[in-house]
Length: 170
Image (cartoon, rainbow, N blue to C red; front, side):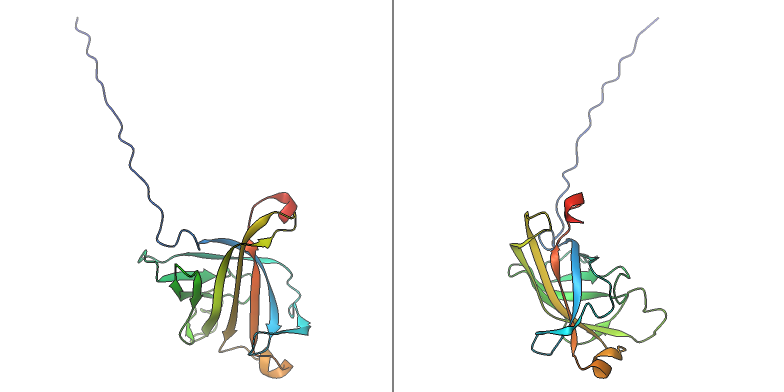
């Protein structure tokens, strides 16, 4: 009777990062009504009474450092759009109104979204627990939004910090 021994070895595949790794993430943010110059309208603050909500930024299928998805996952307006990205400067925006692939896009065909003056500031935020975190801020407007004209503002300022997942920061 013969005994056979089989040896195999596993080679681990090196898994690299995406092209947007430093700017990608989940963010805890608020939305405030803002003027065209970016100043927040005090009495329009948290206009919809949402409080904090999460958005995500992530890599497009092209895996390039010149574009990324900005997605509110239906938590605010239902927007999901590809923004132009300057990866080294950590800034992002759309050139004008672009297609909205978010939750409301199916309900409102032709709806568009515009993102301006987006930036990520590394280590510039403090979480509710007092720990440092990355900050995100950008302005967004929607071509099907009746509220700015009716209530006297121009867009929404979305700002917050990189989500930590810690109970003290929720």
